[in-house]
Length: 375
Image 1 (cartoon, rainbow, N blue to C red):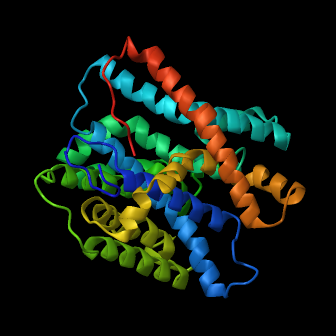
Image 2 (tube, rainbow, N blue to C red; image 1 turned 90 degrees about the horizontal axis):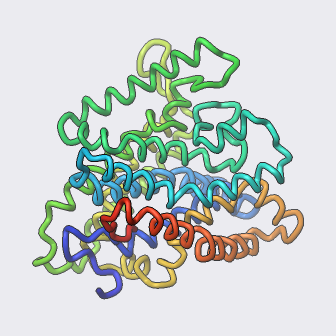
Image 3 (cartoon, helix red, strand yellow; image 1 turned 45 degrees about the vertical axis):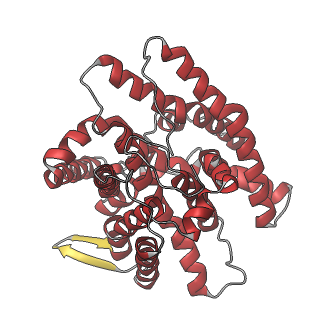
């Protein structure tokens, strides 16, 4: 397949450009978390970069949903083997490296709180405000991802038959969590609706629904007999949509809107959760169906190499690991960026992927059906 080519069969589940976009999104998150450009950029431009890092989580959520939906939405069977295969492979992909990095970080922090260890190792910490940034601080987003992975078999049924009702039920369930949190104000458990929208799956389910809808629309297209388009129409439209959302997010930063009596939410949250994902879908569809400089760059071997390392990079780039590098090695953020990339590549190629393949091989006899590579 030539560089940048879209998939030629609806059965294909590896998308080169979408592997590359993982690296871009991870680097934007790094820039946002480490305040890249604060010292020398104009305030508005600095905030654009910082908010681009914030919005990049939506890119990951839509992408995760698209890939999982493409692979599983129509193939789940109500058998123990199929569900077991799905959950084991999600565990093999995510948990081993997460376990090791989280253990190292907690030990470096001298954090021996059994509560923190429990919340971190069970992916529950984003439900608790006071503990949100314990352990690997940026890993709170994995709670959101894991909630999707855990409920995906049911979500696919709901999204297919009753999409808006399913989204409403998910959000109402989240409001129930807020109500429970109000009964225990000192616990920090889902304290507000704003927190629900920012940090939990129940507030961000629409991003995953967008990924599912993109997968469904894409799978219905007969791309095998159609040449790739040679223009930027959808790619450009998606980029313009996302950039416009960023402008609005920076402009309305810290402003609230009252939806009804006693209930207000940040305008930036509404844009990020419910408007920005549509631009992500347009952009992704452009990457998959149009031959552009953007798709060729993202599909190139070096960028795909970095994209494969993106999960390792995401776990290593912030918190105490960044602080150790900043205070003990170099205050130059670009040098730290390069070091973390090297560490991420080592972690991926010598631990993350080998352990993933080892677990798959060990379970292959009991769960023999093969799974194509995912973006």
